Length: 205
Image (cartoon, rainbow, N blue to C red; front, top):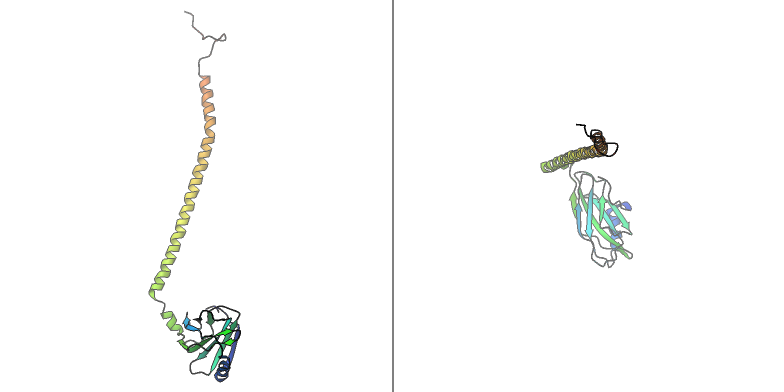
């Protein structure tokens, strides 16, 4: 999966050092982010989303990502942004993670949100999770694409036939005046000759 929403600063810190830092910066008017949710969980990645209270002067966010039962964690921070999501990458498969989110203002950081626990799946589990319905949908999409191609080919062929007919019709139409002239000429040659003095020739009885 591509690294979406790449965040600006990433630091690996011991858990105790980060806790002291958070306590020192928690004295602020900002509220902790709400409705922290983990979405699009893949084998090696996930996306964390959250909401903030309306009116909070938020200019960025900070995320702590920790493996369960492991004291080392990843600290992600980004400022000058209004985004409410961040991609977590380079995760280990079949591993549980704990995530906290903080809002950042010009005066400091909010208290951390309630912890969110999630687990990345195994590669085999992810492959098995693809239901037959999804495969049928993909197959139907391929069939629809083939039908569209056939329809386009038929329309192109019909357009060619119509263009050829119009061309032949124009050729026939252009030849009609010549045919009319030839007919008129032939009819004049077969008509009765006139007398030089203007009368018709008569036979002497």
